[in-house]
Length: 68
Picture 1 (cartoon, rainbow, N blue to C red):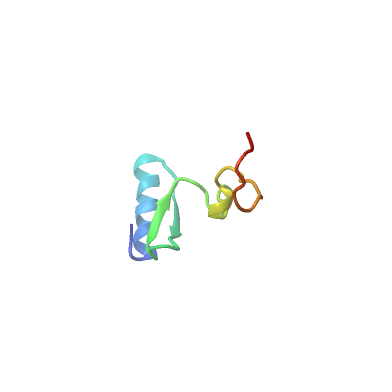
Picture 2: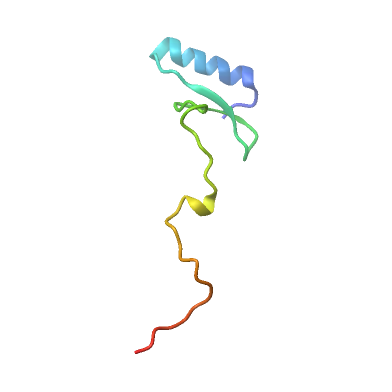
């Protein structure tokens, strides 16, 4: 977690030089700080709404007990 873009960009550049690992910089929409990721945000990240990333649910409304 970094507080400014210049600082996080330096860390990403240093990682590439020292370890050969390419990291991308992004600003977190939740905390507002800057973070590093190993995933390219342009190609691999798609935002899926929270209610759609879980298994699909029935469209039925309410509860109807089974008859025996």
